[in-house]
Amino acid sequence: MPDIALRPRQRDGVLAQEAQGQTVLLRLDDGSYYALDDVGARVWELCDGERSVDDIVAVMTGEFEAPAATITADVLEFIDELREERLLVEAP
Image (cartoon, rainbow, N blue to C red):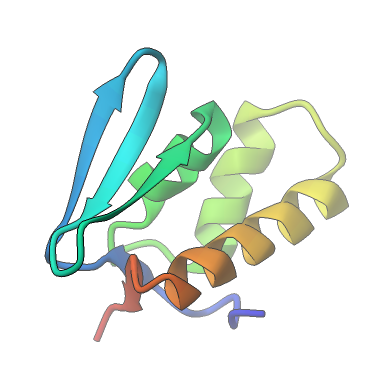
């Protein structure tokens, strides 16, 4: 799981495009693509290198009606997946 102080940012070479109500990410170096739902797209948008994971969780908790513990766990897991897929990197 990522550290809550980590400031994830979208990796260079990843294009995001909205299509038919989904956000699709395309990793240019190998052509891999990933479809995100509304919640995933919002997390992606918040990964700007300025916000910490903790900040992202706070925004999501304010925008979505779910228990804070559930949102925290889901955001941490999703950011970890995006990092494993080389879609996010840690901001310096």
